Image (cartoon, rainbow, N blue to C red; front, side, top):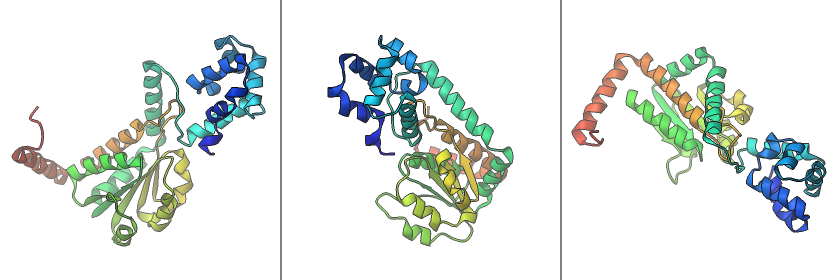
Length: 273
């Protein structure tokens, strides 16, 4: 769905034509758009000191058959990752983040966590790929893996295309793809080019369309309660899996961590605290 077809865009377009009472409702919805999803027509009327009939009439003026249609429009936009402004307090954020974490970690079987960790511990080489908002999660995963094992790289390199690197993937290389919603156009073609038997995908529920193209699909909940997606759950899942991989590496991982720690001290790269 195009962002230009959303509820807030329609309010902006139609605002000069609205009655004074309809503008009161429009002003409120522009400030608290997610109330279109969370509140009933009666609740919106009560919060704006207007009537149910005026609220219903406003949605019809915006081109919707009903409040329910406007609600569905906004849900589709938010689920697609389009920011929708909302004012919430700290308790709302805490509850939402805990819910995202719980739903993410409880939905992935422990057996799958162990299988992925084994792949990351034992693969001769690992390539991580992430675009846009997925890139920081991929970078975080690389940083953790590099502390416990060698031969970990991150793509795409700044300013570079991807085809040359895909061409050079070795037959024993594991590819971790991070692809959260609002993925770039190249993503689908990239997934077709990667070997499914060696590709792992960290994604949100919209990425399930690629489940036949990967060996492991790991679903993360980004939430849709706030304007911007939360990456707390993906970051946490990366931590869980990398911790398990570190455990599986045993003494080998410990030796690498110890050597890197000594190098940090020798080169003075970290604050002494």
